[in-house]
Image (cartoon, rainbow, N blue to C red; front, side, top):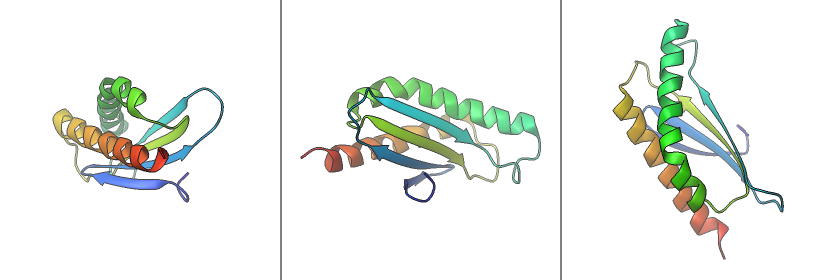
Length: 110
C-alpha cells in the first residue's frame, strides 16, 4: 500500500490510498497512525488518533455514497510536530476525503 498507493496531504495529515476494482461487495479499510518518534507519550498519540477517527466517522457516510471503487485501503498519517486542535484535524480530513472522491470520480468512471 505504501509503495503503490496515491498520496494526498493537508496539514497535519497525510492520506495514502490504494483503490482496486473488484466484483465483490464494497470494502473500505482504514488505519490511523501517529509516530512514536514525535509523540513520546501514549496518551498524546491516542488523543490524536481519536480525533482523526472521529473526524473520519462523521464524514464517512457521505464519502461511502460518493466513492466509486469497491475495495479501498486508507492510511491517515499524522505528520505534524505538535498536537493540533480537533477543528484543524477535522478540516484536514474533510479536504483529503474530498480530494480522494474527486480523483476517483474522474479516473474511475468512463
